[in-house]
Length: 130
Image (cartoon, rainbow, N blue to C red; front, side, top):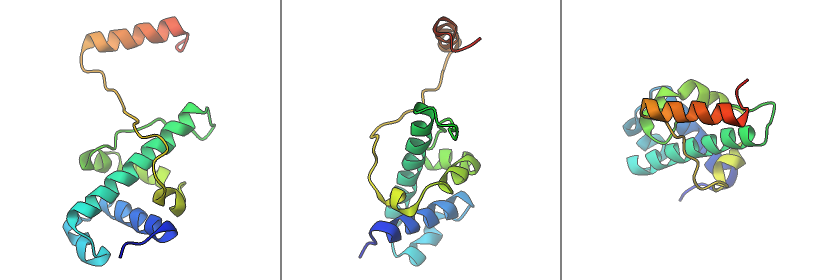
C-alpha cells in the first residue's frame, strides 16, 4: 500500500535526497518496497515539483526567487543536485505529495549562435538588459 499526504511527501523527499547523494535506484527498491520504475517516477516527479517551485518564485518576483534549472532527466537531477537540494529544503512534505500546479514548465536552451543572437536582441529591445 502506497503512502499518502505527509508520508508520501516524506518518502519522495528521502528518495530524491538519496538519489542526489549518489545512491543507486536499485539499492532503494528494498527499503522503499517499490520497483525501480516507481522510484524513478517519484524522483522525476519531485524534480518537476522543484522546477515548478523555482519557476513560480521567479514569475511572481519573489525576493527568494531562484531561476529554474534543468531537472527533467535523472542525469539533469544529478548534475544540478546542489541547487535542487537547496530548493527541496524549502518545500514541505505536503507540497511534495500534491499534484503539479503547472503541468509543463520547460527550459529552452539555445542551440545555435543565431538562437543566442535572437535572445540578445529580444533582451535589448525589451529593456531587460541595461
